Length: 95
Image (cartoon, rainbow, N blue to C red; front, side, top):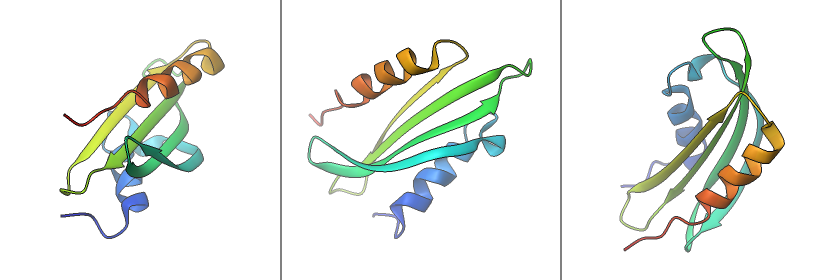
């Protein structure tokens, strides 16, 4: 069963990541991967040592009510790693 508000559900799932409750959301974008709709979230936070950290989450929902989640986190080379996270997320396929 789909959550009624998929965008809100994706935000709640981000906050369930370790340290996710303190994330600052920078972008939320709709996306489609393998004909599944969902959201891509880019957030910033501090790691355990106080170092800035980029968090990327892509969450898409299939027609059966399940979801696919891709999460990337980095404290270095934000732009390079963000592009890599996005490329990886777009490889998600249902069997």
